[in-house]
Length: 407
Image 1 (cartoon, rainbow, N blue to C red):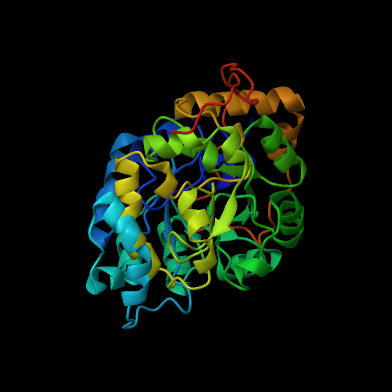
Image 2: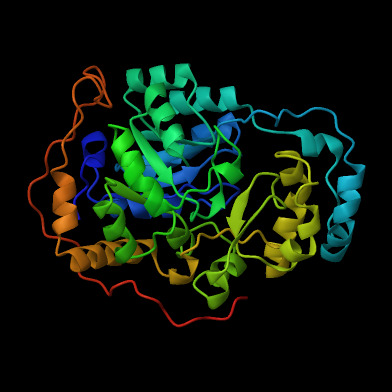
């Protein structure tokens, strides 16, 4: 595969972005493996302090000289932490705290949240090759400073209107995140329930609506999904669950084992684990607490209340209480495979299914006009066209694998 227009922004070899995982699911090892394999490795840093972000970018730069991205969540309206009586919410979860042997968080612990402006300052100072955002538009100063410092800025849209708004706000590329995608939904112009557009409905509409490169995300786990996304106008794909299942991800063993099973073929949207809507595999906790979906407090309060339960359940290998984030193609995952092997097989599978036609077409997609070019003359110019190199080492096609019992 060729990197296409995304390769004009970053010196990539493959049009593949690893989805950024929050909540401790990211790892330096995974991001580096994907970047070293020719894709764009990513790290979800929205829960990290400014000091931790500085350290993270330094570790990534020391581990690879290839491009990588660091992701942040944009704060959303209605999630300001104000004094709230959490007694009823804590008591609702009391049986789970007791069963797992963990204390409930204090009110102060529940109200703590990262300082987004301080996170931005640290990230800009550390200057990773790319910054990606979910949940909203980039602040003006971020867009301006990213251009000035030569940082590629990637936004995430769940609707066409969000993609258009992101382009107007100055992003260099847009992730078209369909409702198939696992983890948290990033809707920010309309409520989530009004922003559930499937990936393969969303991608061609976004490709028609914006001039910047479009990265398809959601329900893509093998070469079939890659080929389909490129045929619909995407310049690249972003894969989350497929990489979450790999050996290097920060997912707990019990989470990783749940992916790629028949049970992973069913996913639901829920607010129960964090207070924000996210897609995951339903388990006992989701089913038992279903009646309380509309009553849990917003992020970050519910996220903080659930953190001790999630952590203890993962440590005790209790999948019934773990937030098993997964997209709708999770059953196609290959739990435990090395990330480099997965990436190579993904590329070989896509090429085999298209005869290289889709990837070649991507590389010749009309570039943006000077008026809409993603990066100005004072920023990094297009990457030099690489000399022809052999394609990826042939690897087995990524088809369904025998089911394994969830741990």
